[in-house]
Length: 508
Image (tube, rainbow, N blue to C red):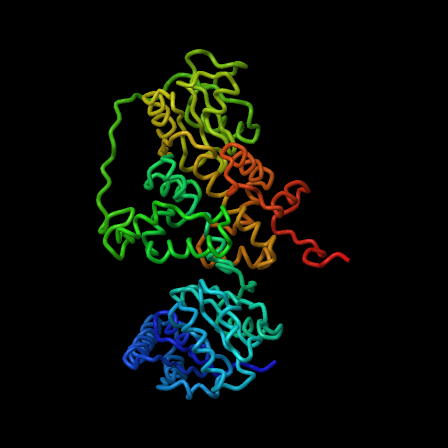
């Protein structure tokens, strides 16, 4: 296996600068090229400044700073890349332009030089198709900012030689980053696995289940995400994230799991992208939140707990005991008791109709995440709103925050997490990557609290399957159909990270 010692980076934008910086820091000779001479000089200045800051902070020594600077070479023509062992293109996301670059490189670099594309949304196979040696072309997808985002997707195109990925994996490790290997499919691993978080949130908003601020609060405080989905879209910019949603949806031939939203499309048309435009779902700079006052009094009566969901019963019992609420132990509720249901993948109205409860006094509580931290209290169309507010005050009297939402199949957290787990299961079902690489990539690339498959194991594969099945039956929307990977492991009591020794091997 030939060692990669000379790395060329084509493109001096944010991605190219980052790749050049960490490659030179790792002791490799780096050739940085851009058609725009001013951009490449600005890149050198910026990279040198980054190293100076690292030295000032004690992250690297003066000697290491000097060595890194000596490894970075600015070149003014493609011909200067002839000695490269690896060329990484980090130019505009345009298939024709990338293909043209690779055709030019074919006549410059050695035949054993690897050509890698940093594309995030285009097909590696399609880019390689115009090369005279498509077998040496692969994907090497870094994330921005490159020095801080430690995961790199190594992508095999359809024609990529089997020796290429191991060399790139070794190269990524030498940079101090974590390589994950993927097949050439729309979105690769991270952008593919991240579909459910924003698309399901947009669907909840479109159904008027809750406003975007409450959905964000629920996902941060109940599920542990660093940013809510709408905060994330504002940070990324809808001008970036919505086209990716549409591209993956169409590249998968309108797969319902990836269906974009009219809400995002309208905002893009209006030029409301997020932080970069001063307005997104939120206004920037942030406007102060004025607490809403309520005239309701805290609930001091009894609550009756449905025994339908045995997985939820202990959680709800502990919750109300902590809140000093007396539990109505009767088989059917007393007329003055509040009724509490906790359906998995269903709504409160369905439970009311099935159990014969008083709709005005019946509310749902999502027990999926254990009843600690933020609580979601779900109403139904006939709910007594003052009663709901009183119950929320009682549940929050020890500092536990509570969100009131409208009736929805699967609450907020259930729908979001079940969809995230299901998409992840389908990625490994397709053999795009290993379960371990998927979880590793998502935690590092998206900063999720847990990898989706580990999360599914924690919550219980059977429970995730039940939520999805009920969502599918209730809505009729095929976006919720469970992945075979999930179904089989739930049926057999296996971890979602489990891979059979025979999986992926054709049966003769």
